[in-house]
Length: 145
View (tube, rainbow, N blue to C red):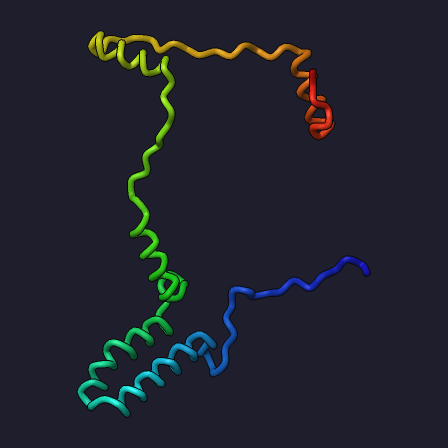
């Protein structure tokens, strides 16, 4: 084996059966047609014409209309999902005691310019840095001291 593989092309393309009609469109139209035939046989002519509006029209819209290159049912799902999500996103960060004290002092002083205390970390020593590098290089086998 030389390691060559056939890469499928056009995986986003739907299979077509009759001309430009895809399998999905055909199934949607057939199901709507069967429902309409059942209503025509069982109910009166008025119910049949009323059901055309509620069964056949949405089926044709879902089957054949595309918005921004995507099928209508995917567009409708995206609209519903975006309506369910909150429009305003709030970052809920944890406030430290130092920040809280700083804010209280700032409010007491009345908007005077107070410099916030800077939190500094002590720099890593070269031995600690070498130890961390060893832990990373050994994949965690070396546990350190």
